Length: 300
Image (cartoon, rainbow, N blue to C red; front, side, top):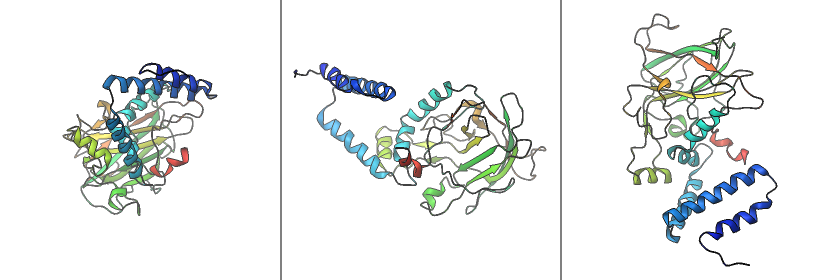
């Protein structure tokens, strides 16, 4: 037995953890302990502050439901989701279209729709046509690639917020044609505030942040042998496009709808054309950083 100091306690913990049989667990937990202890020393953390932090994390967990993932939201507003996404992209064999965040509102069992269908099943508002082509990095079409889309309605609400998980809206799964082409109708999305009625919202307000995301459409695109692409397209005229509260926007993903587009497969609607390029995949690789909230516990 030895008496501990503010510095020796770190080494004591690492020594006890030194026999961890899983090398990756040993590496990750060792680094976490060192950084967490350094953080506590750096800010001279008090017992009351640490108890407040424990209470906050407890509230975050208690706020989670099968349709709401408060921990993903916390990860997003701290920029950890964006950082993990960027780190993950660096491991790719080949990078195609830039990725963006999956976010806390993805649901994996969205309805399968035919090309040209509208994803607005229960909502109304100004319509928008989205079309394009899925190819490999060199421009070769990827026949029958899968395109999953989800977004807010024209009032800035997701279906899980509006219907409490009882029905799906503003989302759908499409299969591209033999030339990798897709098109679907949707509503022009509206920028929105992230949910501020939970502990993450309390933190955002305490930091004096606006807590808003610019209008966007999420995409999850896949094809056999290629790296799954998680990305989003952001409307360039949204006032929050330069200050996204979850750090998801990058310049190549900013779009401006065209009122008249002679190439659009459906006439008479404002339209956006965007072609997505997929990189080849290493064995067992995925591009997702996140999950359907209902599936989070299945991964534990």
